[in-house]
Each structure stands twice: as structure tokens, then as C-alpha cells.
Image 1: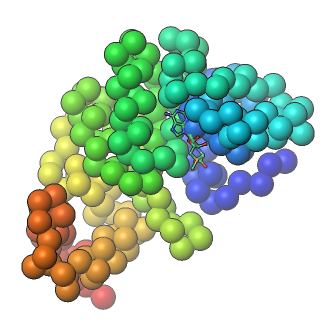
Image 2: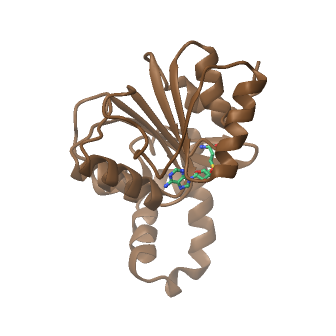
Length: 215
Ligand SMILES: C[S@@+](CC[C@H](N)C(=O)[O-])C[C@H]1O[C@@H](n2cnc3c(N)ncnc32)[C@H](O)[C@@H]1O
């Protein structure tokens, strides 16, 4: 079977139903894993070299995997899959992929999104589109933090400023609290020099007394 990292395993937990598209699949581990579990799976990537890796992995495991070389959701038919996974790229790129897709009426039941930066931009997009977020938390794997946002599978609820900035589960998720405290400690000595969005974020961080100031 395919060996998955803690991060990939965590993402996989959210992929239910019978079909999934792994957008920006690269190594293709999740896509091949899902295909082997009997899910109708589409793996896409904008890079031919990356897609080749997924194809080779599928071949190695004799998995039935549809692969498409394309930008974002462009190569996935409307309604072709229930779940869409987009992980391991920046939040701005994820927003671009989703908004281009939405402009072509490409909407799916559930989105599993894992931006490696700019998670706030992803939340803002989901809020604007009135897409509900069911989970929004952080995991720590191999000393790195990863944001995971699961959306589309629940009713829409507006987020407050803190939830928009730090993710809906910032008060309860241990990895999220650890990351916020670390960020606060790094920013505190240079707080005077912060401006714009960074300053705004720092002010919100300062308000999380019980998270950033406790031992
Ligand atoms: C760092 S890898 C992440 C691979 C995998 N999703 C993961 O989380 O481990 C990012 C992949 O996204 C692909 N990618 C970036 N922008 C893309 C886009 N607009 N459409 C499709 N794939 C894209 C890159 O070519 C690369 O293979």
C-alpha cells in the first residue's frame, strides 16, 4: 500500500463519497490511494512533470486513475466528482482556481483545502461565496504546521474577525494555538515596525490573551 505522511493521512480523512479530484496532485499519493479504495478519482496538475509522477505511481499500483494536465478545475467536468482536494499550494492560488471554476459553474459538494500560506484569503473567498466551513484547523507534522479547511458540506455561517484571521477552531485546536503563540513571540519584538495587514494581525493576536500569553 502507499505510505502516507501524517499530513496526507489527515487530508484523506475528509475525503468521503465515491469520487474525488486531486487538483495539483504532484506525487499523486492521495489520488492513487483513493483510486485503490475504489473511488472514481481524477488527478490534475498544471505541470506535466508532476502529473507524470502521479501516472507512474498509479501504474506501479495498477490503480485506475484519470489524469488531466490542466490549470485548476478546467479539466474536470461539471459534476464529475463530489469532492475536490486542493492542497500544498498558496491560498491565493487556491482562490484563483476556485474562482475560475465558479465562473464556469464548476461547483462541488465538498472542498478539502490546505493552503500553505494566505489561509485568510481562502476563508474570505468562501465567505463571499456563502460556502459553509465545517472544519478549519491546523495540524503539526514533522515540525511543520498545516492549515486544513473543509467546506461546502455544511450550512453557511459568517465568521468573525478572529475566525477569519486564525481559522474557526483557533481556540480549541492545540496545533493552531501552538502556531499562534509561536507567531506572537516572533512578532512581539518587532511589533513597532509592523504595518498594514501584519499590524492588524498582530493586534488581533495580542487579544488572544489566554492563547499567546499562557505557558
Ligand atoms: C507542492 S505540490 C502539492 C502536492 C500535493 N497536493 C500535496 O499536497 O502534497 C503543488 C502542486 O500543485 C501544482 N499546481 C500549482 N498551481 C496549479 C494550478 N493552477 N492547477 C493545477 N496544479 C497546480 C504544482 O504543479 C505542484 O505539482
